Image 1: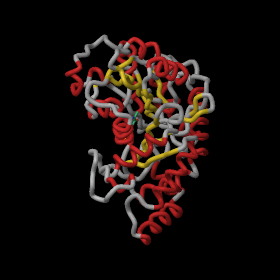
Image 2: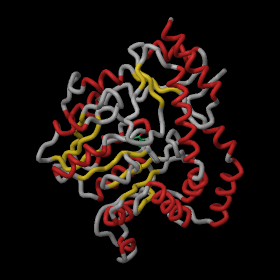
Image 3: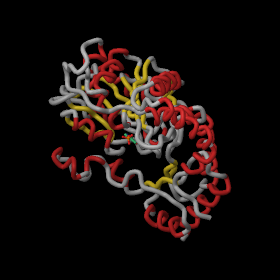
Image 4: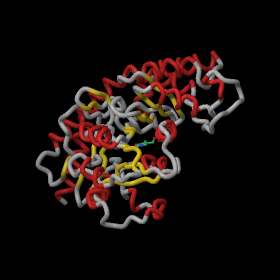
Length: 372
Ligand SMILES: *Cc1c(COP(=O)(O)O)cnc(C)c1O
């Protein structure tokens, strides 16, 4: 039985009629950029995330870059993020002209360690970017406490965690701003690139609205084709918004199914010689990834590949050891947990369309691999 790492064809098959109708509606209307689909989707996402505002942009990376620009991060500032995450969490910091500073992660959850954040604070620290990795939120109590004590902004990288909760509050709704991605591997997948900034702060939302469309002065009541600041072209398009609105109606049931699959994996892999990341117990995990950890990772991955079971390694190299960040002069050994974890993690198939029988096949293959 071939089992793919992701299941978008099956999702689209199930929603085919609604999705095609949404596309037809946009084609017939003839408005393609920042129209009523985007405006409606923004209202629906704000409501879903429990924020006052949501502003659509072209990608999750742009959501990070524009929210940093919106709160004034730039040259001379330091911004702390996790050493173990997707590149965009940190490359966007560098793109503002600020310096990315890494903090090590917690062994049990793979999320950024508040104690390690504190160890990296300097007078130049301006913001924290906790990443809610694999669908589970970082320790937002401790992170907000540090931010308040040191007057720092907090930008939640919620690209993998839309709908995840920390003590009843949804990802993106606690910090100064939250950044969502609708890249096709995320829990709410677009048919292309798309992203969103969510925030309780009207000033931040208005600033992102300005920056996403070249900062045209008409956006804030001034004259069209006049510009007071430099902006970007980073707009969410109507087709993606229309498709995402259809999918948003199913997101809660997809999250529930992902949690069922995770529980089944935990049951079937119980007693195996591997570590499963822990749930923090303070709110909902949305399982964008189900990640196992074993020093025999490469062997397990090869064994599953031979049986046509797709897996992937998020992430094989921590960010402080990437060549692109060589100018920051980090060395091997600087972030021991991130380094150990990146050598041992493996993400298994998890998506709403996955059947229990398929989960059983994957779990059995993992068990066999570990026994061989
Ligand atoms: C996917 C992702 C991003 C970037 O989102 P894009 O839409 O691909 O630009 C940023 N941070 C994390 C943690 C991600 O997983």
